[in-house]
Image (tube, rainbow, N blue to C red; front, side, top):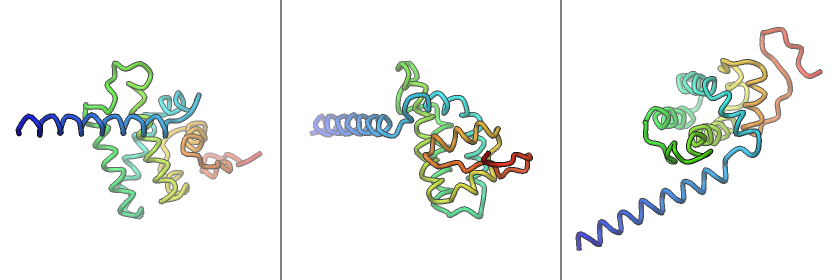
Length: 146
């Protein structure tokens, strides 16, 4: 009886892990977007912290961001780092998937307000999240589309 429970639990964990892996493969950025996600990852982490601390955002968004930050801090990954390509990319893929959800719910303006990186990094973020970037509205003096 105990062996059946252990085997059933192990099978459930394995099936859940495979389902998560398939989900990551489905939502991963395509082509050069994955390398862009890895390039702006430090700015993304800072953005996540800022967004999670913004009390003006909906509670569900902040909870999602808090869970994501917890995932990033925990040393156990969905895909071990020794797996080629996806080993290091799983964090970027999970971040992009959550950011897509956050942008849809909170709006691009909130993300723009808290973006710590360069304009090029923000444009890359927009490509990653599938949001059209209509130009710069930052205080840096960029003229916008042109």
